Length: 320
Image 1: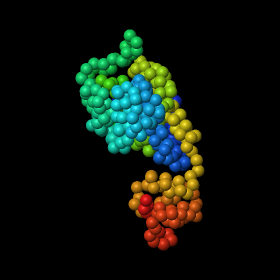
Image 2 (image 1 turned 180 degrees about the vertical axis):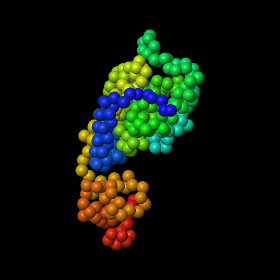
Image 3 (image 1 turned 180 degrees about the horizontal axis):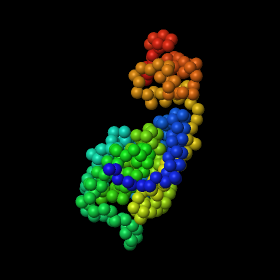
Image 4 (image 1 turned 90 degrees about the vertical axis):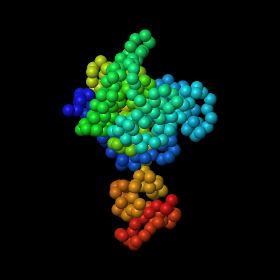
């Protein structure tokens, strides 16, 4: 039997519907994989925001400089944190959201050179303090492995949609606090990896930026869910954060693509070695067959595409 982690409220249902519509707009506007410079900017925002929540002092400009392999002056620990995060976020697609070994490997890379037990569940008790007060006492170390097994079982077997699963995992991982250090950044990282199974756009969506803007509310809803014994409040909060992030992306990047942009988008988002005009139009459903023909003809003329066959039997292949 799958453990129950939250109550299905009308707010969760309504937010899930809104998110479904926004993801439809993302796909309709061909935003699944933003332009290279936007991917870079959003990756930097993600890393800087997530680490800032944990007390990292480096600015966006400093993180950007490290991203470009430039020398930066700052606290050595903060610089290591950024370098580790850049390394991990550059290989997001290589992690399996349902595999604990992959999860532990991510922690090992994220916390390399920062803690002695990177990549291992804690073997000691741990509490989170706010001033002199205990804000959260994590479950005992002997139960961590069992709790994480249950959480990964939920992730693999629950019929909940992927977005809700990501929110539940984020909260429950924070509650379990499976590591001595790095739990916050791991919760946000693994939520992204889970969300990528729903839509590729989440690889480049800086959700962490919105969390960092609402940092006090973030901690407040974590605490509220602790008291409730369910993560309903946190799920509602995170769904709203994801909604705001998607709305911002659509507002900033939504546009009508020209022929060059359509060809580039198709190249980046198609696994086909050779494709037809029909394959092309299956991606760009709103363009006419005449527009598709002109796009492909221009691609051949500009040396981007190679064509074989004639008329409807024509096939195309990218050559650069």
